[in-house]
Image 1 (cartoon, rainbow, N blue to C red):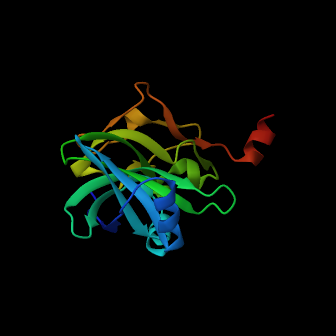
Image 2: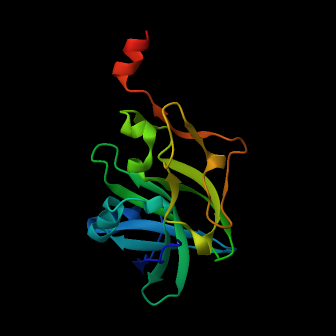
Length: 196
């Protein structure tokens, strides 16, 4: 269930501060910083179009990347923030955190619902109301799940699906200590009106 670690290409950025960052943006790059793991922060540049394409693929903040810096080492990183232009909503700076394969990190993981056709409640016209499409889990960096799966088999109108009802991947645990709701099967609006 763990996803393959995608590569992320970057170049070393010479100089720091606003002037160097503006220069990088003029040259078609997005400035960034890589920090953590007890090492000095290192400034990097990412190609603007390359980064934009990655951001539009989705789940950028939930993905562990193998960062390849020109002339430098490969390191596993996770994105901790993307600053965007206030008007254009385009990336202006990216923060990455170095992580070891055994590091435990908190990430929002996508929730996938399967077996809609095996749910009597949905067959009768009920609606799947998704309360949380993503759940924050504490996971091991080397074993980040692509998604968690909720099986709707046998679910009837009125059923509520909690986090404890879901089989989480090995080593993953919710960051919230309570048994929160992920989704429920609601009655169709016609049925609710008839009962009233």
